[in-house]
Length: 372
Image (cartoon, rainbow, N blue to C red; front, side):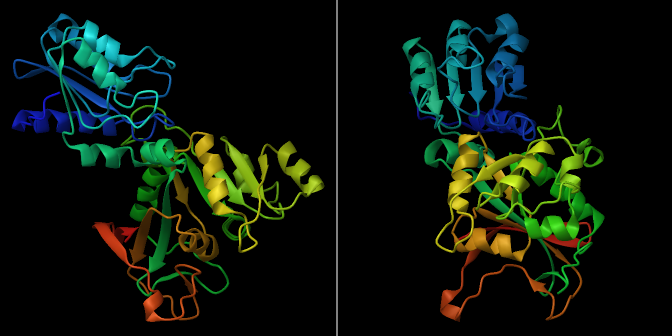
């Protein structure tokens, strides 16, 4: 396996990553993968994985390249698979094509692959290289890698706040703090997510659908967006069957603490799945157990869209990987609700964040931050 990395390696892997991002909203629960095949400095084949069960990126690129793949170099953002799933192993397909070199950004964390794909290629006499733009490739599949390695999805908390850090008025009113551009931007985070988690309080006050609105994503997606599951934390199963959640297609999961047979039956008959989970130390639904169950169901990325209480519960439990915060140029005053329900007694209890991205979205500021 060669460790040499060239300017061309970086250039073509960048192109493969660009292709992989085109599957950002459609590949779940599979990883996002792109592939470029280069012959004599010319791209002769390219492809990306668009949907679970569909052809993998390498197969699409090989089909486009045809006979020109012989003696070429393939750049793929994730180690080619080495197992039979819904499709045959890509590593074997690349070996048969007669490539002279295969460059992968990262090894696959899936134990069914985990180095086996590159070994198949090396055993076939193909030069291999792993590690070109690895950080970028890992970031693209952070949820998949987290689920495979640790049994948890990647968790984002999305919040909209005023400049004084308030998310709603004292009576719960919150429509609309941010502008239309920010609300449209939120649709991308929803579409990237396997599941959207909210709380019964948000359902009762705002009556959201928690869907990806077609008019908002038609400009920037490729193929039909995989509808995220809607997951409602509702300890006593108080969700009304008249809620907008039931009027939209897609998987709806109501998560409670205590068995309430009559209420559960009513919700189940209306089309919801019922999950009864144990309580955590705080007496509320054990959020880590919830995330583990979602991961077992195939959830790579989870978006928390809820009020300060639910968002604060995830933060206090140390289960947040990323905060997406939209800040509007307005003030709501000291009586309005805070960003998070997370009482801290002293400055020593502060929780530091690392801001990874800051940009204007319409008239609002969008911050992306990770716990330090």
